[in-house]
Length: 172
Image 1 (cartoon, rainbow, N blue to C red):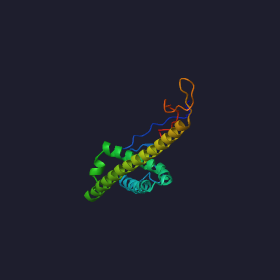
Image 2: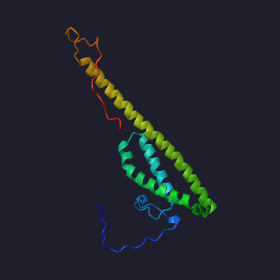
Image 3: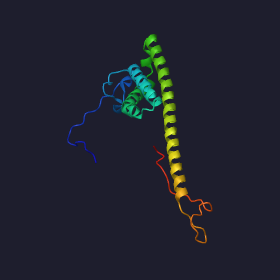
């Protein structure tokens, strides 16, 4: 369903310069006028906090940082797309600023790799925990389960191993 007014006159949208092109979804609160250098610094700070929280297993802190991390990532991607379309904006920077941005970008890359590794380790440890719990529940239920032999005798668990239905959500 289209919620746009059809009776309103349509004005053409003026084309924006490539260096200013940023997707609307990439705008984070308070960061609309900040350049890529500021966004990189903010992402580095945020990833440093998130990595520390992941190392301390503070999942509530990690969860609290998620929305801002996504906003900054979208902003960063918008800036990188604009730079890719028009590299002259980076070439126009003085060498000291360009060097500082390159170093900040390398630091961001290192933090992103560490973050990915920590997130992967966290997910794997959660999966291992749930698998251990699931296996323990299954084993306990199998030991308590009654089984019948072909002649009707009860508690013949050793003769037949039963697969009981025990599962958990693996998409966590």
